Image (cartoon, rainbow, N blue to C red; front, top):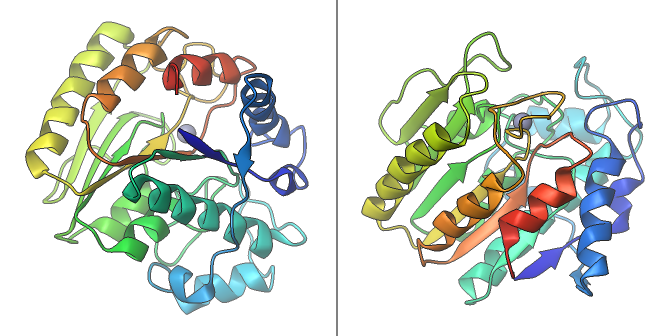
Length: 277
Ligand SMILES: [Zn+2]
């Protein structure tokens, strides 16, 4: 497994915001302690962003001319967002070249729709990577929140199957209650716990296997952890070991992108998830 990271993604944001630099720094420090060397993400080109997003969204991020209560207008955010998108592209490229790429860059991406940012996300990193290579792609989103942005972008795209397991019911962003065409949603109740989660994941993985994708992108969120201050689906730290193993059993080119996860145990969840990777 090859990891993509640049310390530049820790330069922005506040420790008070749930999507703080420290959450990614914890993962970085853990991987570094294992002796892992990181690959630097390239800056995503505008043309690759425009395959997914409207010119209006690109310009508003570039000009820092937007307002969203969760997704702050920060100095230089356009470059930070493009670096996270570039990390996603590199992760997919690595996986298509018969290794496995995992980008731990921030900001995350799965709440960014074609034309709007939100939920700490500016550009949809997963969608940008998927559209770049134009392969038959399955996206599995295991963040606690529904990837409303990814659904919006992938809806009706015959080359993509989007599958999401997420907390549903009085929970952000409120979408993902039903499946529709190439969008397969598994809405789950708060605190369901490992057994039910794993059973649902097995069904989701079967659907992905039946789709026979050439490439699989995983939107990885650790906010399903039982002590996560934002999410919570009752998962234990050790649940991520089982989740990681089941995903690897797909035995196809898989790349991974970090989405959410806000507890101080995030690096322990990561350690379980990647196994010996
Ligand atoms: Zn989340």
